[in-house]
Image (tube, rainbow, N blue to C red; front, side, top):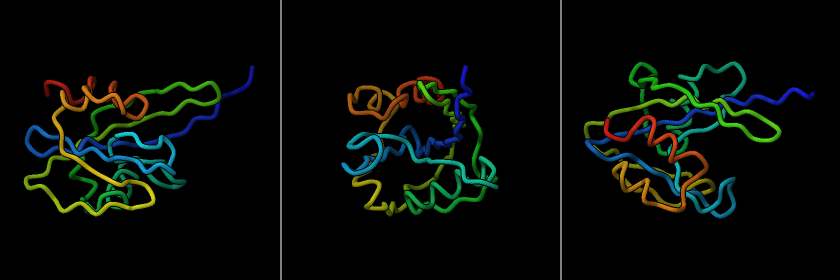
Length: 138
């Protein structure tokens, strides 16, 4: 039996009132032309909290202190050759921030309710599970 690689990937549910920030991937990125929440890989030497603050800033231009994030939990996502451990954070914003996308990763963004997100067929893998687990009826 071979040991599976374990990868940590963080994600953030950014909330403004009843809406959640969703990002649309470019055609050239992993999971092309799909909607997802901000997030990415935890780099060597980084905590999950540091990684989500960095990823959120890199992907959206939203600058937040680590202490502003609330950890909601984590989901294991199984693939044939690896396990992705996916810590999920939440950030509440009082005003809709200006979003600055990284064009090599994302080409659009929308603020949607959890119900609107779940109605989309074009979601990144397990985004529906994340929304149902951590955002629906919250």
